[in-house]
Amino acid sequence: MYLTVLKQLLIMLVISLLAFLFSRKNRFGSSESAFLSRILLYFVNPCLIFSSFNRAFDMQKLQELAFVILLSLLLHLVMMAVVSICIRSKGEAEQNLDSLEKVGIVFTNSGFIGIPLINGVFGQEGVFYLTGYLAVFNACLWTYGEYQMSRKFSLKKVLTNPNVLGVLFGLLLFCLPVTLPEIIAKPLSYISEMNTALSMFLLGLLFASFKKTGDSPYTRRIVKVSLLRLVVCPLICLLLVIAVWKLFAQGHSLRMELFVAFIASLCPVGMSVSSFACVFDKDASYASLMVLVSSALCILSVPTFVRIAELLIVP
Image (cartoon, rainbow, N blue to C red; front, side, top):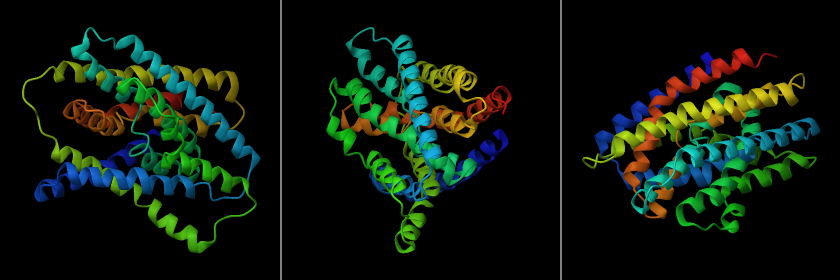
């Protein structure tokens, strides 16, 4: 499996490099990345999530999805505990950067990188289970994440998030004794297939438009963030996944579900931290740097941890 993961990451890297060259040539910037980000976040991703539920009802799959949701909640709680221990503000001056780091480490790029990666490794069935992780992700992002940024949160933003709505309406469709007619299912399928290319194009655009802002404490901090996001959290999540496998999942054909949630937790810093930096008037340059550095390094860390998990989680 790790070779499939590595191959898919390399394919995605090629798209990002082509997008980087194209963006540099055409001098694309923040306005284009914001526009593309909104298309992916509020249109393409919800369509992909919703269409993954367009299948005949299966009680076993519903139970397996519930398992992924519970496991994903545990993974997020563990990562929140890690950042609360490892990142402690020493003064008000550092609080802004600390809040960005906490959000960036806990909330991985499970949408823009996770969806195409899971889709490439496991196909639509993997995306179906990934919706459980994404539901927990969005619920935690707009509660814990928003609280880290503003010291408040809105339940309305959780319930009206297009990705959460995609899961809710998708579950409703899944539980009904019908599937979508081809005249609706086909357009959703075409839109869903845009996810990988657009996600990687956005990443290449971010690389192309990033501008260094001179001397700063970024270097020391980015090393710490990268280690926490790509090594420490994955290692602890691996131990949790192995424990769950040994205690509950072994012999119950839940290996794919475990790997879907685990791979989502291995992804680099999520691009949601860049959006939050703009919305809550934080350091957007540092937020982008976290995304870029961790995205570049994940091509080494993700296949490595998948390989270790493969050796330890034996069917």
